Figure 1 (cartoon, one colour):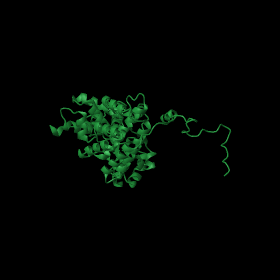
Figure 2 (cartoon, helix red, strand yellow):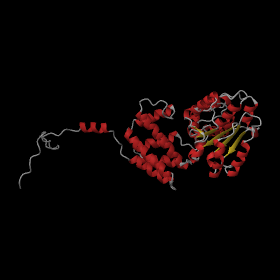
Figure 3 (cartoon, helix red, strand yellow):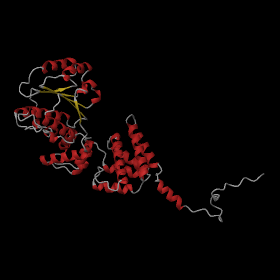
Figure 4 (tube, one colour):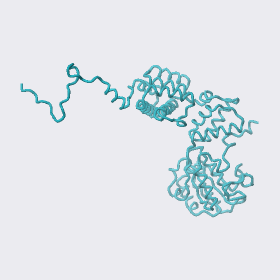
Length: 406
């Protein structure tokens, strides 16, 4: 039974334009183009990994070759749709640009495009990671891409569009796929969990969504990993332990220590994290995010939906914010940001983290200008009879008396 298991990222792969998460601008434009009969011969789908580029290419192929089409809503039941879904369609070729990047590979492709499709309405070439093609391969593709046969469509997918020659870019319609919002990823995970009847607490779902970094595929891969480790359900603490994520409680301890000017407490917390095997660069990133959440809470009267904190975590963070000032949080954020830059090139991450936290914990609290002025106004005013205060200023319009002659 185990050898028949289909990973969640494949099982829940988008099958229609409406299923594309966070890419409404792409789905709408492609749907309208198909509906109006204004489909280009070349497309470039650009974006980070796991946001739906190859899935959108397959959906486009189904939309163009569906028995009921061309249609923006392929049926998913006809021979064309089924064969594209299971990868058996001979007229829809998915090519890995990283391993088929030579000029000979592209020449073979050019020789095949002249032949009519064997079963479908179009021959569609989907080239993934197209930026990996060699310069000669791009040159060999140029003429065919400029004037392809009417039965041929090209769909290129890439994570690095800046590496593609401008001569290729100018011959394609470009669609930029965006990172998927954390709340959208969390919503899709909850939907899948409900369909699969899998228990997972909301806080654990939020951790998965945040760790996915805007990639739905990464989120589902992480979910598969969590379910393998905890088949009966997992809590947020289980997920953070499995994925090596810094716990929120530890981030709160460190933030409280630096805000309360307690370097020993901050260093002890980091020592515990290091002894527990937490990656210190990951800790620094998480701490920077936590300081960002504190800044949001300190700056916004209504911060609902603006932080990634659970209700109890947000209450604890608000109590922390009341013990400091917004300018001081800005200073701590700048120091934490500098630490992250230092860790990128440091062979001694623990040393840099310790020094940075000691610097944060011993930094003077930065007061707002209004508070400084208010304190100055409350200072005792100088009195002439006492003679202890500063000398009174001369009246306006009169300078100080000249010095006496020796």
